[in-house]
Image 1 (tube, one colour):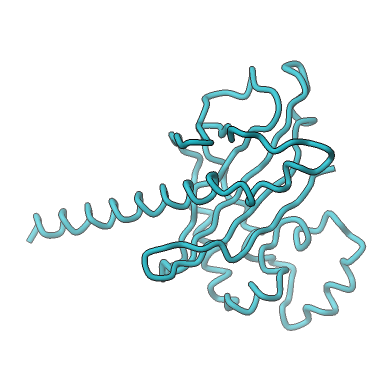
Image 2: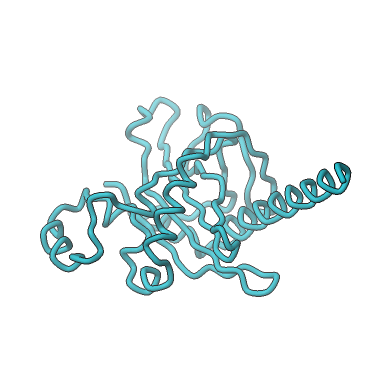
Length: 203
């Protein structure tokens, strides 16, 4: 019985790691995910350089505590001139099409799950992407990514990235923020398809 439990646990771990790797691959191989990098007369990098430590999740991606969906229209009117409100730059479900897919309970569950994720080391290596240990000597674009989050039913996956751009080695860190990108994938059969993307240019 103990051996069966260990085998079952190992199979689950292999499946999770495999899906995580697939979401990373789908994220960084598809250049359409990174059209944000062509704004402000920038050129999309040919090689996506990723820092080898993940960023922690922003819970506002999934749920806003001060946002009452029952009075959504009134709240949006109140905050429409506040471009810094997380509803505009972080909240994934400001997109009505995505909002209809995910009930509030699921959004709250994703928010709670996101809080349990800690920074961790990753190693990614593909045709057009790779991880590096430091941004100190980098110039141009580089990325810090979250670890993917999967919904409880395993039908959806989410990944969040911060985009940085460096003009020089001596540029202060707080001047290198360029934007953020969040992606949503849906599983159909054995494959994943991107169904949502939220870009935000940091000015």
